[in-house]
Each structure stands twice: as C-alpha cells, then as structure tokens.
Amino acid sequence: MRKPLALLAVLAGGIVAVGVAAMAQSMTMVGKSEGSVDIVAWPGYIERGASDKAYDWVTGFEKSSGCKVNVKTAGTSDEMVTLMNQGGYDLVTASGDASLRLIAGKAVQPIDTKLVPSFKNVDSRLQAGSWHTVNGVHYGTPYQWGPNVLVYNTKVFKTAPKSWSVVFEEQTLPDGKSNKGRVQAYDGAIYIADAALYLKTKNPALGIKDPYELTETQYAAVLEVLRKQRPLIQRFWHDANVQVQDFTTEGIVASGTWPFQVNTLIANKQPIASTIPVEGATGWADTTMLASKAKHPNCAYKWMEHSLNPTVQGDVAAWFGSVPVVAKACTTSKLLGAGGCKTNGFNNFSKISFWKTPTSSCKSQGTCVPYTRWVSDYIAIMGGK
Image (tube, rainbow, N blue to C red):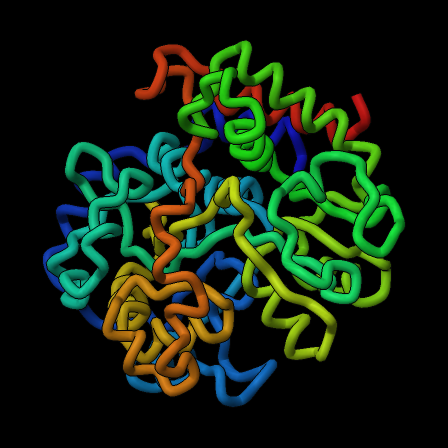
C-alpha cells in the first residue's frame, strides 16, 4: 500500500522546479543524445524482448538514437506521482488520475509538439485530451488507452457476467459458491470511481453524472458500497504480476483489471476471459510526460517521437492489450494483427469513463468531493474502517 503522508504531500504541491515554462521554450530543437533516458512506466509498456523476443521496441531505438533506456515500473498512479516528485527521471507514462496532479505540482513541463513530428498522427480524440492539455498547452504525447475490464474465470462463469455486481455485492456465483474471498479490488483511491460508475446505473435517483465528480450525498453512497464490498475482497491489488498469480493459484474468480493481466493469463492457458458490463467501465488514456528537471531532454524527445511510430504503437497494444493512439498502427503491426484494434476495444471509446483527478470544483454539478478526501477515505476502507 502507498504511503499516505507522502501522497498527501504530493497533493499539497510537492517539490517543484521554478521556471518550467521557460525551460520548455528554451529548447527549440532536438540535439545530441545525452546517452540515456530514464522512464517511469506501467508494467509491460516498455519491452526489450526479455519476456518474449518478438516484443522489443527498445533495442532498435537504443541503436539508432544512442540513448540507453532505463525503466522503473510503477503499480499505481500514486506511486508514479511520488517517484516523479522525488526526481531522477526524464519521462513518465502517466494515466489521467496522475497527469493533472503532475502538472499542478510542476513535476512535469510543457512540451513543444513541433519537436515531435509524429504528434500530428495522434487520434484527434486524444490530441488535446483534458488530462494532458491545460489552457491549450500540451504536457506530453499520448501513448496508449484502454478500459479497466472485468476479468472472470470461465469455469465459474459459463457466460460473461453482465454487471459489476459480482465484485461489489455478496452473492452466490454460478458454481454455487459465494463470491466472498474470491474477488479483488484495485489498491488506489481512483477505484472509488468504479464504485460510482456501478452506482450510477444501479441507483439513478442519486443523479451521478460523472463518476469523478461526486457531491457529498453521492460520495457517501459510494463509500457505503465500498464498505459493504470490503469483506468480499481477498486482496487489494496493485502489482499486475501478483494478480496474475492470484488468478492462477489463489482461487480468485473475478476482478477489475487491465488487459495486460488478461492477455498474460490467457497466454498461460488459464480459463480466463474479460468483458465490459452494462454499466460501462473506467479506463485510462496514458500520456508520456517530460519531467520538469529532466537530465536527458534530447533523449526524452527522441523517445516520445519513437513511441508514436505506428509499428511501436501496434506492438505495445498487442503486448499490453491496449489501444494505440495512432490509428495507422491498427494495420501496420504484425503482432497486433488485422483485428487487434477491434479486439482491444477501439470501438469502446464512448463506453469508457477515463481516469481524471477529482477536484472540488466540477463541471457537472458545482461543488464536489476532492481527491484528498478520496485518498484518506479509501485508505480507511482498505483498513476495514
């Protein structure tokens, strides 16, 4: 579990560099490589063929650019924010629940999209996403996107579960056994939005319009759902590989998850499938963001350009189970294949409520509960309070 005091410090502002905008504007061209680039990334996002030789979008880049790629994986957005505020990294593949915090805390700097020629090829729905663009200023290049799917054991569920209720409410599953101790929840305060999305459909009288924008009344109802869920949970997961093991050996039969775990479990010949229930799903649109104190900005810009190569985009999507931000990747990557984009949810964009940082001022209904409250309350719930 993340350190709450460290996280609250990040939310309060964090340690920042001065003159960030000036730093970004002073770089008018990509120059000589510094020799390396240090990246904080989600597991499976930056592969060099160590797990499977076919999946390698690092080695070629290192040879052509002269930049050695060093990767630090992070299991949650909160961990990414903490690492970026500590410093020592050039880039981070941040999700929407972290990106605005990083911008507000000045841990990342604006980028000049003219120095990333392939930016023009990014899906128009993502080019100016509100999670990485503030007042028309871009703070990164989109990388991948996708839903937080419901993964389930096909020996228990002969047909796909229709509702997220299988993880939120105690019930007898199709195999005649209770779901208690057989389901998981995400170890991150942003998971409150999953419960809010579920409650939006189950109890429309609450008037929830946006799962990230909750009034005090709506928020209280969502927390009650999570408190009732707590006795059902076998583990609050944040490590993708540990969750894979839990589905393999610990009897877990249903959970919200990333497509990465689903693909891994299926590749390991486990009886696993995934679905997006009737309530829809939360999801993530990840952005490669440049640290305000990046020591290797030239290599960082070279990596951002490389990351938008259609083949790289498609290969990442094939490995992670995500959707590329460059449409051409859907027909370019042999690893992704002709139907890969559709399989990974290219047509589900409208069904996804993308992660974003909750604030007290919200567009849908005036004053809402801010993320600082989400953090403290979710920590208490995980602790059984």
